[in-house]
Length: 289
Figure 1 (cartoon, rainbow, N blue to C red):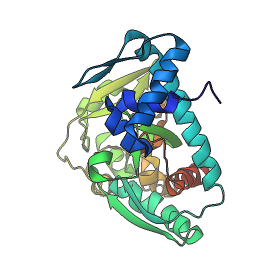
Figure 2 (cartoon, rainbow, N blue to C red):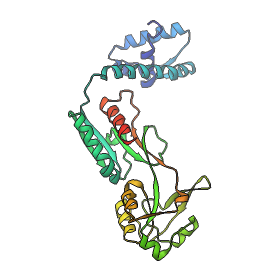
Figure 3 (cartoon, one colour):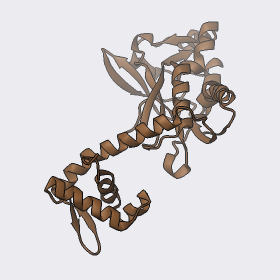
Figure 4 (cartoon, one colour):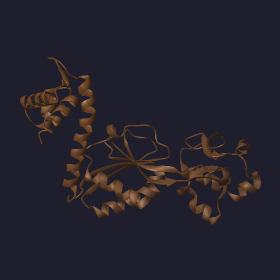
């Protein structure tokens, strides 16, 4: 126990750059914080903090020690939280955001099942194709599709999606079927939010810029245009699987089909991850796997 003494206090001071703020965080006195950090420095025989009347900063040794101790403190808090929440019932408001169509078709029914399992949980579901800032908007979990941008958020892979290029049999009869990526320039391509379609050619990813008479940020609208024989469309399987099965649409350029993309749950890095968020992510991972 002696080896642990002062570590939590030191980490709090390093994060807050203030003995007073650290004392407030740990609900103790400034004198207690100062005494335990001083004892820690004495035991280690090294100066960890530079102290002035205006500022507290880490020494070189303090910076190294902080990086290691931070992980230990976070691990201890996570372990304690996990134990205390084992028997706790999740409750309270859960704010979730997801893309519109995926949210309507795939996510909402699962969230409703989750609510039936945990009656004390309330749901605020925001369906939008804009990527909300989780911190600013107070969102607990964001469902994102495809390739992720670098961020400080924690990402949990829930499932995968496959993109298909499709057309109606009538469109192919009238305009012909493309067999190579270069032939796309000769076709009406129904453009979504991105003007590039993704493929894999000779084992390597390839992005192809497409053009057409219609540009729309609604996958359902593009799907309808494809079914009405206006052009080719590239959409995930949850848009087109039923129409491919029925024959109302047919896949083209299957030899150039890109690798599957991830479906992710994103949430802020938070050592005090709530039980309702943890359980929701686990539930979605099991249901979508």
